View 1 (cartoon, rainbow, N blue to C red):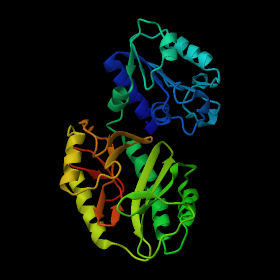
View 2 (view 1 turned 180 degrees about the vertical axis):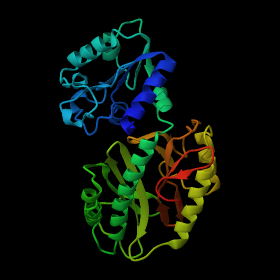
View 3 (view 1 turned 90 degrees about the vertical axis):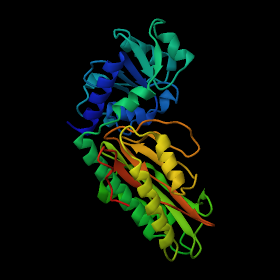
View 4 (view 1 turned 180 degrees about the horizontal axis):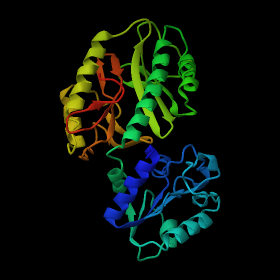
Amino acid sequence: MDAARARFARLQAAMAARGVGACLLAAPHAGAFASGARRVQVAGSGAAVPWVVVLAGAPAAVVFTPDPDGAPGWMPRAHVRPLRWDRAAQLAEMAALVAPTAGAVACDVDSDALRAVLPPARPLVDAAPLLAAAAAPLAAAEIDALRVALAAARAAVGAAAAAVRPGVPHRALHAAAAETFGPAGVGFPLHELLVWRAGPALVRAAPDGAPAAGEAVALQAGVRLGDAAGVAGDTAVAGGDDHRLRARWRTACRALAAACRPGAGTAALRAAARAAGVAAVGPVAHGLGAGIAAPIVDLDADDDVPLADGGALVLAPVVRDGAVAFRATAACLVTAGGPRWLDGAP
């Protein structure tokens, strides 16, 4: 079973366990997770109208898109439908699909227009817990796909880091990362190369700016390759390297990894990060699969979401020493026996 079909099977199981008859998804990463569709055009739906419908017991999701080439080959042709630019017509067609099913309707958006086309007796529930339940454990095909995507992201950020030199414009880093996409088979990045000036905080760098000698530059590359997303980050110093901060980052990353156990909560990850002296600069960890996924672990949050057995996490602590910050990433699989590193141990 390939990665996309494994995700779809887990979503169907989660729907059956929760008495959900239909799942409607608008967020691009959620739609890609549930359907296996890649890089489809969804602009006509806006951010508030679903474009993926999953019906309980169906062989595949129904995808509304003007870009049918993005649908997986195993999806029946009747399940790939044109996206309507008329919102009322789009919602009415979705309501017709949902009508024969029984049980709650899960959705990642909530609007009066959507409620108006659904039968009043059908409860509309949040799709987030459903998607979280279906996120793990990852199948072998998904883990293999993640490793390949992570390697492609690591190659991109490595090329960008090698291009960090005094006086070299930041736009050259984007070009260096992009040069790796063809050999790796990356059609589209998950996001553009992120470049930050790594001073006391991380500040997005202007493309035409250039680092001075000794200035630190933090980088992150994100790619989507096949059925998986890959994210990798590192920090480079123009004209050198801050080995002391890199060693502190490794210590912090291993402390985070030690807290990654099935059933442990995101509160435990935050506690481990604080004890290791991690700075409150962006998420210290996030899930990974078809895209960046829950849980998003932020030091300023107060949630306590259990970590799923067999789920993938990207650890991204930031350590700081006065005027310099250091950020890098390491991806692991959460298992009872401890983390299984997916792109090299820190």
